Length: 253
Image (cartoon, rainbow, N blue to C red; front, top):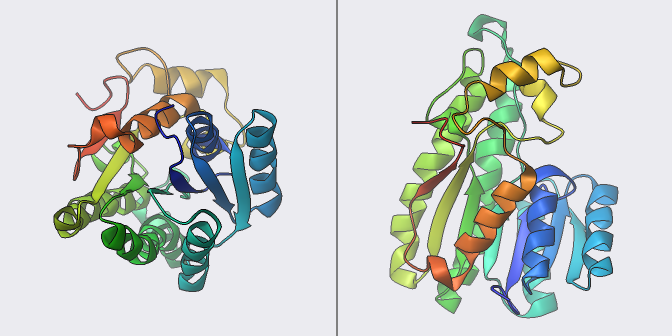
């Protein structure tokens, strides 16, 4: 088991990439605190982990609140005695639209969750990891940070911000033996996918248009990101920090 006895916090883990990663990390031996604003969804993920023989607990948290981030870090360390991985995965998408049609409330929400939420997670997780002199702070970025699509400028800017934050935090954390890495997925089959397409649900035509932009000929499944996250959390990735790992089927080439 690549993550035996490690302790991980995964935000946005009620569904999609977060749920898949929580399950994958638990299968590899980690104790996982499953965090989401959707408490019922977080508990459902924990049930799946426990049915598979893993160890996990659920916590409701709003990543835009400092107190909630502090609480989940304290809970994980109190319950399991350490913190090896904090995966700041929670995020919100943007409906495809021109800049002049994006209202300020939408901008504030996207940046509050996608940027402030990551910053707050780091604010409370990194001090614990620095004291331990080990740990990984992992972030879900996006290929939108590298190769934006038309109509997604606000989301792209938020993900670009966390890619830069990854590099800045990696420099700060490295002298303490702590790593900071981002993952940049291409469009992924999660509940957020229809929003990126400005649809209520994914239709065959829109899906085909997206798939046509990916050289490997498909979009990500959540498991693609989960397996990357497990690798990055393992000892095999001990020399990777400050990087943004593109899991994109060649989309950013």
